[in-house]
Amino acid sequence: MQGRDGGESGELTLTKGGNGCLIDKMESLDAAAVALVRAGDRDAFRPIVERYSEMLFRLAYRITGNEADAEEVVQETFLRAYRKLNSFDGRSSVSTWLFRIATNCSLDLLDRRKTQPQLLTSDPEHDAEPPEERVASEQPNPERMAYSAEMQGNIRSALESLTAVERTAFVLRHVEGRSVDEIASALNVRAGAARHSIFRAVEKMRKCLAPTVKAVV
Image (cartoon, rainbow, N blue to C red; front, top):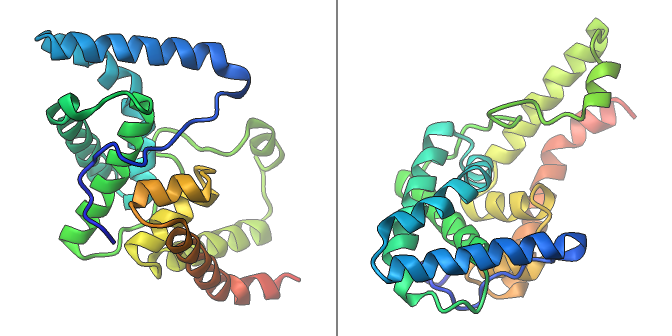
């Protein structure tokens, strides 16, 4: 893997879709904030921090599996971004630039610690389960509760069996819904290498979860 420096080359591109007007407005606000910071107004960076802190925290949390680590990643992401703001030339949006830096910071943190993160299987602030599914499962029977606990434990073990890069690739693909090209850009590798990391992660997950899945077929 090439060095991860948070540079802008090969940045991600967001799909605007039906929210094109809103995204265009956000990008305009970001561009204006960047211009003000470069002109010497340090406070102009604050709206960018407020706008993207939650998004970056969720990404970092899913990669590191630890709230304290995620907070550290978010802080380091904004620090790197602020220091490198003069190198940002607007070829991509600020949000995609921050996304890549946060991914790199998460991997750097895992590299430094050389430990597998402890998985937390839900979002830190609230349960990500859709409301309608919560209503349907308000009073699960003991058998269902036991199976759910077992499955969560197996998923945790499966994710912890992945390398840092495999885990990141898996999260970006199957949780964040990013494309292979976006993942390659975030990891600073070729698309083929990113695709291979995703494939290895999925194969390891399948192998770890196979006994549980077969038991209920």
